[in-house]
Length: 153
Image 1 (cartoon, rainbow, N blue to C red):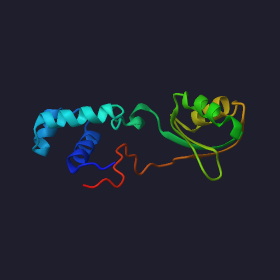
Image 2 (image 1 turned 30 degrees about the vertical axis):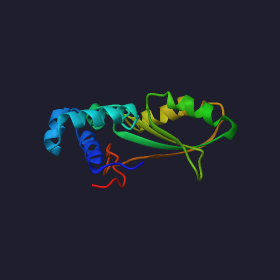
Image 3 (image 1 turned 180 degrees about the vertical axis):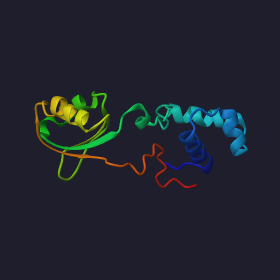
């Protein structure tokens, strides 16, 4: 899909501040507000914009541990296990993986003990989980919620 420069600029602005009005974005881009409104509406309809949300400093809310869990599972139960894990509130990201593990899970917790309890009580008890490796972040240098990839500026 080929996107215009204006389209990319709107995406970038909304990722930085999703609460900006179309009128304010229009002023920043020196474009009519109706054009911005139309393009944002089109992005929503085409599911390019899935939702608008707030970025929260989770550390200030007491969540200081990010755990990464690589799971080796019964391949015949991949979807079943993935769907079960995806429903846990603590899970921030879950994907099927290539390499040493079938699934990779990112978990947000208040501390190492809470992370371990979650893994022990909720992940290890799932039928079909065969093995797991856990890593946790000791210091986060970058946590970016904006996804620009190689979009042209």
